[in-house]
Every structure is written in C-alpha cells, then in structure tokens.
Length: 217
Image (cartoon, rainbow, N blue to C red; front, side, top):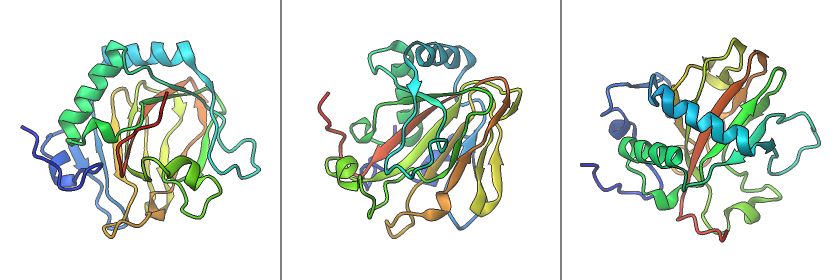
C-alpha cells in the first residue's frame, strides 16, 4: 500500500528506495536516483512503436535563438494506449504521486548527431513563457525518464554540476527533484542529452506539477 503523499505532486527518496532497484546518487546538490531494469523489454518495444508512429520535431519553451539547441523528435503518448497505461501504473506504484499531477507522457527519439543541450526541466520564473506554461498547473516538481533501448555510442545524460553521466540501457530509469528542499528551482539539475554517435536513442519522460494538470484537450 502506497502511503498518502504529504505534498501532492511530489515524492521522496525514501519512498522511491523502497524498490530495491532504486539507487540514490551521493550528492547534496540535488536529489537524483536511478534504477536498472525498471521497465521490461517488451514494454519498451511497445513504447518505441508509439513514438515512431507520431514523432515530430522537438521544441523548447523560451526560445534562445539557438536552432540546434534541441534537435530530437518528440511525441505526446496517448494515455489510452495499453503500453502507456502500463507505464503509468508502474510509475504510480513506484512514486505514489497522484496521476492527476502528471503531464502526459512524452516520448523522444534521437538519431545520430541529435542532442538536447544543457537545460533544466522547470520553467524559469522570469522566463517569457512562464505564465503560459505554469498558470494552470504550476511548475514542474519531479522528472522521471526511462531509456527504452541500448544505444551503440553516445546519447548519455550528463549532469554537469556533479559530473555524473548516465548511459542509455533498455529499461533504465533516471529521476530527480527539480526543486531544492525550500521549494525553489534547483539549477544543479542542469543536464545535457548528449549527441548520439551511432544508432538511435529512445526515451520517455514523465513530468509532475505542483497542481493538478487540467489543460483542456
């Protein structure tokens, strides 16, 4: 039985680490964890098929003038798909976050040479598009990202501030709190989706918010 979360839209390392696969990165700069074999290979394959079906060029909030800042392809996964339902169930079992606080699952595909340069997942409070993206559901709290396949070369996710790089492995989960203990945005979560050097990289990302996700379709 998953305990009721004291703060909706968030979870805790203690709760996540009740799953024996979950490991916490030893740093005081941010709350960062990973888990090998979080998703089974067959579910990863099903999610890859959904990404390939609906992918489109990725975009960013608060455009910075760099047309090559994020060169991957993206799609929002249909929550009615069986594979997406299975994923959502597994995430809830792990983190205990009320699904009402979650954004739709996003899938990403990176071909050779594609990357997402160093960025944070939260929306900058002083950013031009902050009100547009945060007026309804607030800012992002936690990020849960899963690699869906092994990559021949490159494609790691580097957290530069702490010098930690995660390499893609089928089913591997990486998750982090985008905020400091006082609730402010944590710039130490800056991370780089590094260039794929050989092969193709597929990932899914699930973001959670401070308030329920109530955007109209």
